[in-house]
Amino acid sequence: MNQYQLQVTAHFRPEVLERVLRLTRHRGFRITQMDMNTQDAQLVINMLVESERAIELLSRQLEKLLDVTQVQVQELANALKKIA
Picture 1 (tube, rainbow, N blue to C red):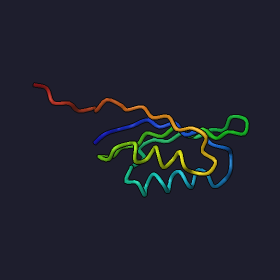
Picture 2: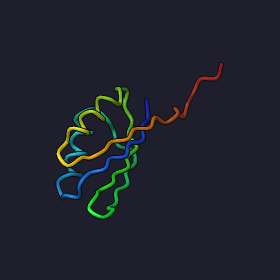
Picture 3: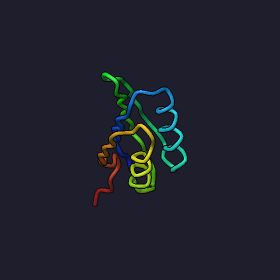
Picture 4: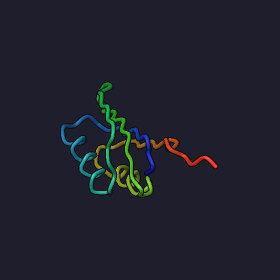
């Protein structure tokens, strides 16, 4: 299973977090860790997600959400690798 670190920056509104969580679930990703904080009028959500699906399926849709201003993706190394 692939793991990805996402940072979503959005305008601070009550419904934004709910939209991000719902979209993540609908696209077939599981959130394993999440941190959220506010900076001025911005909401910053850091998520660790995992899925067999390509991360672009999620990141492109997150970018289209109302009030989302930026989505950054970082692929994490798989914890278990076969040793030859």
